[in-house]
Image (tube, rainbow, N blue to C red; front, side, top):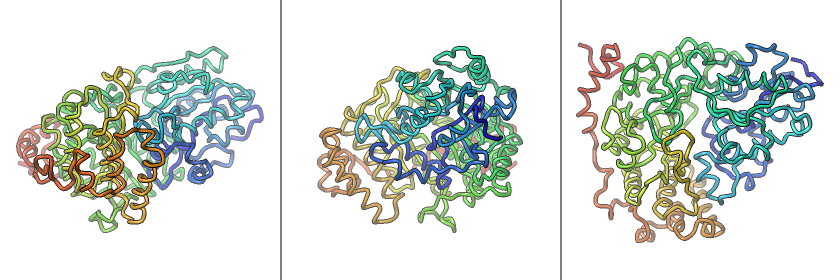
Length: 570
């Protein structure tokens, strides 16, 4: 594609923070949703966002959603009418002939779950880096000069509608939801000069409308499944019809990524354990999972295969599957920690939602997470599941939600008790403040501001951070720097921003003696003061009682129990 001085008809782009493959770690991208832009001048991090481009200025790598939109447009328009580029190259492609610019958004306003704590800890008006970078796209001089129609989509598009930021950001149309069924119509309308609807709530696409792009996407993402079926009340993906993409299509897309210079393939899913599972969906299809990941890892040129979102119950259903996936994937991991027993000290780190330690809240908001077990055993499921993962060098990133509707102090105490039970395990915690999402059963829930958090809620957040710090930051100097940073932050800003309830939890993070903190906090790290040291229990009853059911469920999928199920064949 040569440069056209009049511009390209359709241009697709995304903020650099969404395209970066910094150290091939998706978790590095989370930093940009956490750090306020006003405390991080762009020259500090812009070298990490430097993006490769093709000789004509188009993007080599771009987020998966933009690649989907590109593939749809290229089915109906010639290649010279569609350009995908990074923000710094927009001036090369946007001109008087440009009819529409599609912008992929992940966190355009700074209202994502992670921002609720990680950026707003500096104050409720703090704007994270990725919101700043999105504005940098939308305020680009070429867009302001030629005024093409701006169509925004992606996982964060709902934030634009919720805050009515259309005029401020210069956005003509926002697509909420999966866009496969509406993208072509919207771009055609823009091409014909028609007015666009301000908001399009895209209907759920059918399996036949699924588009699998064959151009390189950020982190080599290939979409493994849609939907999950566990029906969590605070989640939108669970509302989607669950289906799995055939392995041959996924492998074709993976090979295309590698041919175009990629080195990482990231199969994404709301819960990769449901891949090609039959009925019941919560019993993993071990044969399909092992076969798929072996095929991906076996592609020449693949150096890294990260794990996506997952749930804990499948680890109890089939511990042997965890062992098999470790055998395949530990050699394809770039993550390292001295606690790993692998010869190269590598580990795997799926994202797992624990969300609460309260069985009562879990039963109200996410009973499906426990299947095929009882939600009343939620803490035992979590503890035993984490133990199984750790034994196989899986050190998960686990999310918790603080401030769920109807949450009480007793619920928070139970979550703190669960942290205490897990204090010797290898886990990185990501607590966030509840954010109501449209179309969920909790859409009308109240999103707390950090100033509204109770002392128990702050204790949970900062205890979780402290446990993460002590596990993940292995260099003593860096660990100490984090703690001193919190101490300085509290006295310089935190006590004014968050009030007196922030003090003692912050001091725990800062490393102040537990003996001094003990009278002021609920959780006693020495095991005293809370009845019993819950971590001393060995929760094997759940798996023991469920073994017979598991065997029956494995057979019901049409798979004879084999070594992949950890069950001997008849």
